[in-house]
Length: 268
Image (cartoon, rainbow, N blue to C red):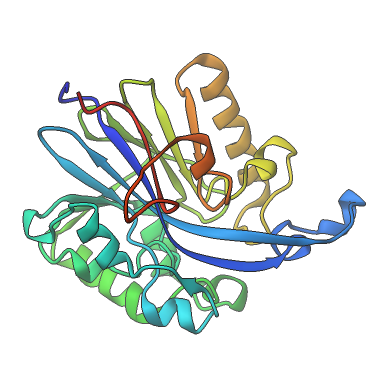
């Protein structure tokens, strides 16, 4: 396998059941009937012969429990079963600082990490405590992140950043001030790990923003940016951040993780 190509692993660790009006912003303006909808929770692993990269670390047991999220498998256990050894200090890419994306940073005590600078500064700033932002974070996890930055283990970036050969972070904004996506090169073409820039494929395809948003215009702009990436060929495969249909779009993994894991790319 080329050093700038990867196998992308999409791994589900949690889920919740809710209704459409809870996930789409100002849902009545679409004049659609309300109804049930599921939200799944994922982490992502990028691997080739030279390196392993983790994208986000999922929610902690506490972070999920207080929000009544169902944990299907504890993310640290899931990483272990995926062959990710924290002793190897894999690079950890953080797309944003919500509870379901930084809940297990302590599982990687020696790993270098990468995060948008605007994301970090926002959560250390004067608006982080406001209810419509604060409900999506855990204070102790933000404190742990701040300590990692102070210790020099987090590289802060702006705009676009090459995290490794064949892996690029792109700051999108919208959902959070520094929401980022990850472009990964694979044998099946470039993959965009959209994280929460696109929670649901319907959100993106029907132009229906998610209910949690820091900058609504920025979220619409993010949709348009991703559309241009897809249209231009910069991205071939789009991986949503929470859509239950995500795993069905890619190659299923059999065995004890069947139903929880899919992959993109060839390791041969």
